Length: 73
Image (cartoon, rainbow, N blue to C red; front, side, top):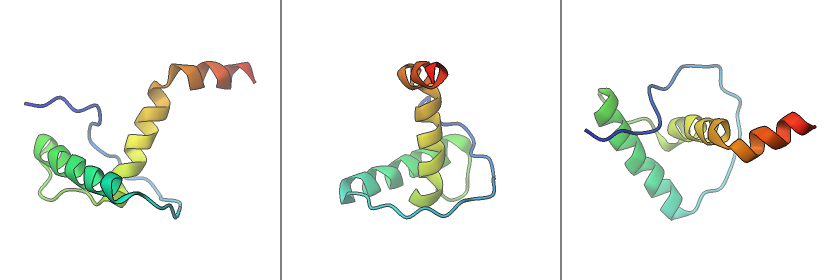
């Protein structure tokens, strides 16, 4: 079994944000969502729009440099 950094995705009221992704990143998000669905038992993978926010959230939460800089302000 693959151990992904991203666990189950919680439902939360979304805020609309429009961004542009490279085709490669879009495909990688889609592939990640497929593996995530398989590993967490979801019937269908989340869309790239749904999987990207928790990935970004996890990245920010694990960035020690950001946490340190944030605490200094």
